[in-house]
Image (cartoon, rainbow, N blue to C red; front, side, top):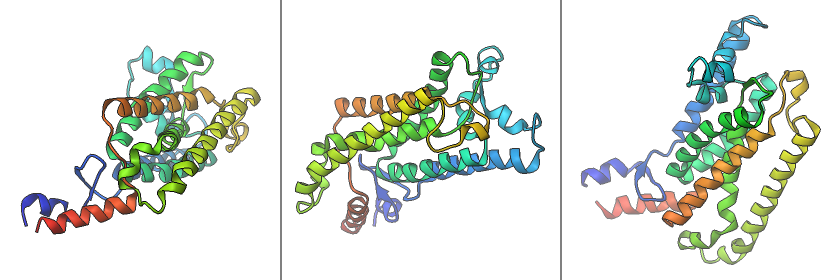
Length: 254
């Protein structure tokens, strides 16, 4: 057994063939960091102006562009306005992040980084009335589009799809993903018109909804998918097929 086989024996191969860990490490790290940030705010510190952790992490246009605190572009996604806000955002992030990180890590990491930077900048540009921003909902929107959009054109993914399942999947997946994207746009439109969020009680949580952040995340994810599709066409692998092929290759190399 050579060194490459030993390194890959207990790992899965990603869509581009590199050896990667089977655990969604980045998703877990971001999730734990969000929980720690919020717990420090609500459990260790008194309510009111003393929520120093959340305030230091949130996006603050004055602190970023006048004080040079650029780290807030990233840390604002870890801070939330209430427990209800955290639970909804984190639940969606864990589910989508786990699926996407195990499916195609490079695309997931690129989308995560780009959307994390683009979203607060979009809020700064499009919502001058908002001085602060918190939450993972914008990144959640990016991950949702990253998962649904490639299913609209699944023809490039046929190499690793089981023949008996493909005739049904080739029209079901585009229909379902199209419906999901339409519902997502409807949700953003409702929040823009109603001035409230669909799932989180923004009034009791004490924040003003920003559907612009959701649209910005969706646009960032769409740009990543488009760039990858036009630059290099790499077939995606269903998780169970990717795992099986990784084991088969390790056995063949022995």
